[in-house]
Structure formats: C-alpha cells, structure tokens
Length: 357
Image 1 (cartoon, rainbow, N blue to C red):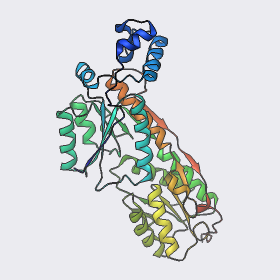
Image 2: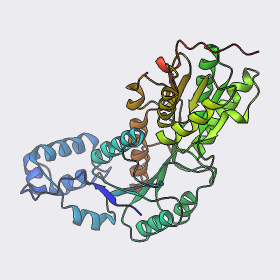
Image 3: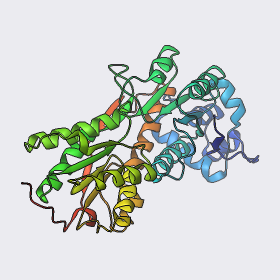
Image 4: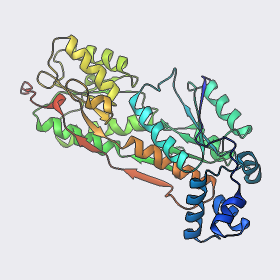
C-alpha cells in the first residue's frame, strides 16, 4: 500500500472556550448546548443553529478524543485509490477529493486517503482499516462489475458509499453518472459533423463506467445504422500515455478513423498529442473528444469537446451520503443517477471527414 494522506478538517488547537462559556453567553443550559453541538434532534433546529454559530464565533473547539470515545467513532472517512502509483495529479481525482474535503470539513470529519493497486495490497488495506476501525466508513471509486469491496463491506456491516454502481448487489448506496447516454450524445454530435469512422479508446471493462460508455458508443452507432467495427476499438489505461499509444496505432491504420472518443479526458488529451505529432490538425483533420469535463480539457489546444460530469459536486454528495449513513441519518438518497451534458469545443469542430463510399 502506498503512503497515506490524512486531510485534517478539525482545528486541534487548545482553546480556553468551554461549553459552559457558550451556554452562559446564550443563557442556555450546559446540557442544551452540549446536545446542540452533538447534533441531537431533540434540540430545536433554530436553537441548534444559533448554538453552532455562536460556538464558532467564540472559537469553541470540542474535546475531540472524548467525543470520539463517547460516540464510538473516529469521525474519519477513508478513500483508497485502486491504482498503481499516485494519480493525485489527475484533474479528475483532484476535483473529486476537493468535493469530498469540503463536505467532510463542513461535517467536522477528517479524510484519510491512500493508494493501493488492485489485488492483495488493496485487500490488506481494506481489512486493516476495517478491523482496526481506523475509519468510520469508505468511499469507493472506480467500481467494478463484480466488486469484492462491496461484498466485503456489506458482509462486515461497515458503512460505505460509491461513485458508480456495481452488479455485485442489486442495491447499494452510490451516486452514478449515465455514461451510456452521455457517449450516445457525443456519437450523435460526431455523426452530425459527418463522421462515420469513429474510434473509441476505452479501458478494462471490469470497470463499470467503462462498460457503460462503450455501450453508449455501440448504441449510438447502431441507431445511425453504422456497423460496429472492433478494429476501431482499443483498450487503453485511462492515462495520457495510454491514450497517446492507442491513438498512434489507430491513426496508422488504413483506413484511419476521422474521429476518436477517449473514455476519459486524459485519454483524449493523449490522443491529441499523438495526432499533432503525426502532423494532423485536431478539429480539422481529426476530431477528438473525451469524457469528464475537467479543467485540463478546457485549457487544451485545441479545447477539448467532452461529456461533462460534475465531479466536485459528486464528491461532495457521496461524502454527505456516507456521513449520513454513519450517523444513522436519513438526509441523503441511497442512490442517484446523474445525466451528464455534452460540451462542444474546437477539438471536434470544423473537421471535414472523407465521405464514406
């Protein structure tokens, strides 16, 4: 398992302000203030909000260790990236962590982040954090069609939420994105531009979202009565380097594609580099598009057409869902499906594909 990054959202400085000081200022009992700060629902919401606001203004910091012991919680959630090597530089993960971090901070939780490649190292990490109660729950990312993490955590009755669905259980707490419809919209856009030889650079279909997006590609072609050509589909690894290598192979094929869809923005950005090194003008000689809607794609040259999913907001929502589960609150829906939206930019405009015979 890789190194652990702990994002501390609670102020741990020793301050002189005590519960009794807040109670005195508001002319409330110490018990009322204590229960308001602990989030008990037997305190009126207006009173609870006033207590919390006043405590913040006075600089009150709870005795965290005592509160944890009393609640039998660490007030920490875990996120283990199932990847080889650090991907924190990936703008997708940066936005996702930012959303989680902001929501956990708002709810006075910490975030424990680590990296473990799929396999034994990943299993050890989950077993260790679960058995030691190092965290109160997990956020799962890059869910798989058959995901042992979901089976294990469900068996252990350990709280979790996931970004993406899985077929492991009929129902599990998650937020998903309708990648199938998103890529269908993208295929239609490329067809409207006159493209008929549209390639797709994907990744392992063990990942649920990859299968969803590939399905959208296939359905989009089928609805346009264009035969699916396996020679135009290539398996990458979700990185710039993978997109670059895949695009080089696709471009050299005869006949070559007139458009390439990357399963994510990084793949598409790698494809842009390959096309430009091959002397092609992206957006004119070859259309390239991605999926995610990250800032990196917006500032690429040319700017990348993409299917936008609100990664920051998803990170915030999936952590709110998990904390509600941990605290046995009913504040969040246990499943949600977000429809992404197509953003058309220069990387797919002004291209002039050769008409099909």
